[in-house]
Length: 181
Image (cartoon, rainbow, N blue to C red; front, top):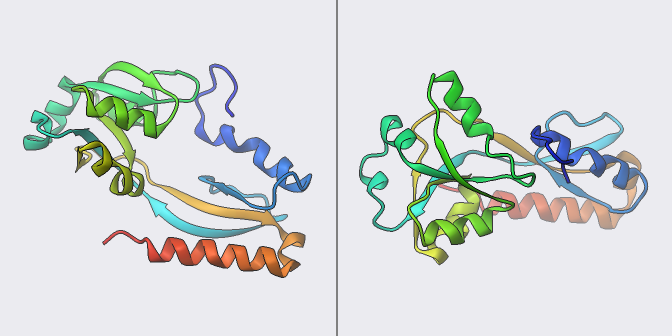
């Protein structure tokens, strides 16, 4: 977990590598690209973000950057920091948004968005699976947002274990099967 007031997303995964080395876990699935060479990494998929909102939201009909910054937003942040990667992208466009609420996870964000006028940026695959369950619509973001790569990571020595190698293969197959159109 990130430490209090810590906003760098990759810092949240810093303990995963020490836990892998201590054999506290066999595989870590992390959105980190800078993986130490002592680990074996299997890229599972690359992800981008969409904007989720309740059905009937006016933003769905006019999903422009101008309208986007006029809306109120919900931010997913484990630390409660109201600024995130979307704000960094908006800064590059000389824009800013109004954050109304922060929540610690994407599932809670979808539940709140379903009963409000708040917009929330969520991973595309996550939205494809869960947004319909909440009656939410999604649109492509009206500004360039960063993409991230999700990888399965294990200590190189552990990959000699046939069971672990099998599990890595299952994870990769499941992600290939779930590729969005």
